[in-house]
Length: 265
Ligand code: KIV
Ligand code: NA
Image (cartoon, rainbow, N blue to C red; front, side):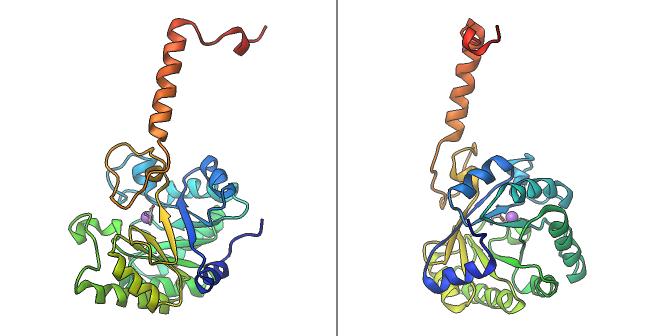
């Protein structure tokens, strides 16, 4: 299969073909999602919650994300792999942001980086793009600034749509090839999508965007506990694995496993 490149994102928007993305943190899921034709895989700092067991994404480091990103990038044949820049790896300035982006590109085989923030991150985006590294922007609800935003709150409601549009314009002008809109009302996302030349990717931003992205563990029902309203669960992996573990445990306890079939003579 032909590799997905940034121009495919642009062409998809032009042709009205929806772009699909899932997060992935390991080679097993990367292979499966790639073969299923998912266009891009995001090695998100949502691995903070889903892999490392942190309460938020804030503690996640570049050193933690690099091996996960390398595993995903090494497993795909077609999908475009995006490395998520964690909190504290780009906010200080464009120079720091570029250093982090270069590390991901050199050490993982990812095809692009993602960072959070609109106007406030425009300088960083510009600098990274100038170095030949594609940037996926991320505006609306930005989990790394949860405390600054006052919690897990929908962004771009009412008058705040102006701010969202300004952020969208800022990342496009800075050179981002696509922008993630997280947790914004559908109509605000529609306005951003109409305003921009670059494709918009919704994660909880409704149907009027150029693409959709979900956190794979939420989407596959592996997350235990509450998932956001915008997630539709396409599988019940927690149930499947839980039942398998309980069944195996019982089989071992009663001697059903291993049978001669699963033993060497
Ligand atoms: O880390 C992540 O999974 C993300 C998406 C939710 C946009 O940044
Ligand atoms: Na993220």
